[in-house]
Image (cartoon, rainbow, N blue to C red; front, side, top):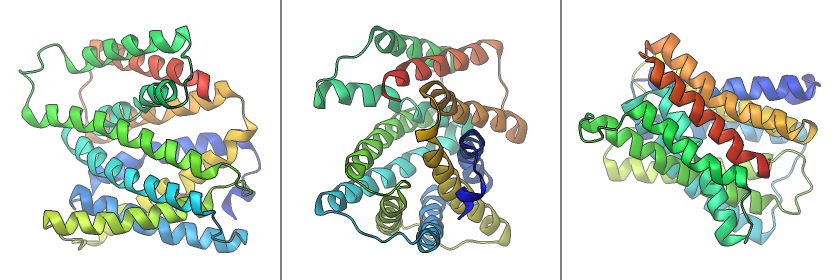
Amino acid sequence: MPVDVLKGPHLRLFLGAVLISLSPVWVKLVSVSPTTSGFYRVAIGSVTVAVLMVLARQRLRLSKRAWILVGLAGAFFSLDLFFWHRSIIYVGPGLSTLLANFQVFIMMFAGVVLLRQKPSVTQLLAVPLALVGLVMIVGLDWQGLPGDYRRGVIFGLLTAIMYAGYLLSLRGARVGSENRLPLAEVAVVSIVCTLLLVVIAQVEGVSLAVPDSSDIKWLLCYGILSHSFGALLLASSLPQVSTTEAGLALLLQPTLSFVWDVLFFGRPMQPVEIAGAAIALAAIYLGSRARL
């Protein structure tokens, strides 16, 4: 199994974060629709995870409660991809990924409402800090922004909500699991998500056909490298690293997505935008510390 070759948890943590940070790059590079790229991400990922399950000799054995929760996680994840892929097209890989990581604040809110958890002072301070960073990136003149850009920001924030729902559902499904890696859970999520995206494509009237070999190449990178190996490398390393290191890995993903946006797609970054991104990333880190 690939993760067994990489014995060092810090190496797995870093490589996992790097591979996941490339996810929006693949979406931006392909010429297919956002729904189509989402479909191939999870379809290819389903096959990859199934192969890894065979190699790890892990059976698809879940409790009734876990089946329900992973099904719910699959529904959330399909909506996550629906909104995120559109946000990537409209505002670019960097900002869309930063907005998706605002899920830490949705998770904090869910902890207060559902689990009666009291947020720390640091977490409470992180919320306005994140909003300040976002305003510095987007600007104060909301109505003056292009319509697609505004839609991209809104879709990015909706992604954060769906991502939080996915994480909460998956966390619930993992309670009592005997498997170190969530291969079975991720496999079911991927299959459910694949089926739902087929339905969404039918409703939209979007073709799932891939026009050329270049798109096939990028979609394979997306499904195998980012969706499967990236997530599993990260998941396998988290129990063996400190909370600080896990938090920094969380920050590495949107940070690198901004770097790829600038390097590969020539995104212009003004000093105030760079400062805003740094502030937002710091807020994400502070908001996530209590639950890592």
